[in-house]
Length: 96
Image (cartoon, rainbow, N blue to C red; front, side, top):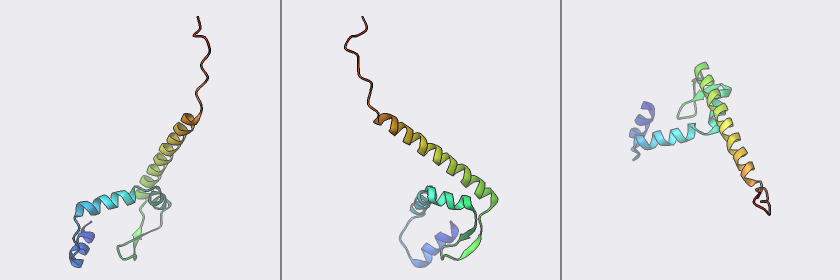
């Protein structure tokens, strides 16, 4: 975060760090980003230059997050599929 703050100041941008944090949170919460981290590989800096590799800890955490997102997605899809079905027809009598 420090390198971003310095870059913002160097460029004379008018953006608060709270906005940057919120944008990063949104970006890193997307399934595509989480899936890429879980796959491992290189990390890149603000200029797109390689700056290290994804750690085993980050891979494990991303894998767990991705699995949780999949479960949440499937549960939502199952609820949606169940609500699409038509309710059973009520009987003509009330059972008396």
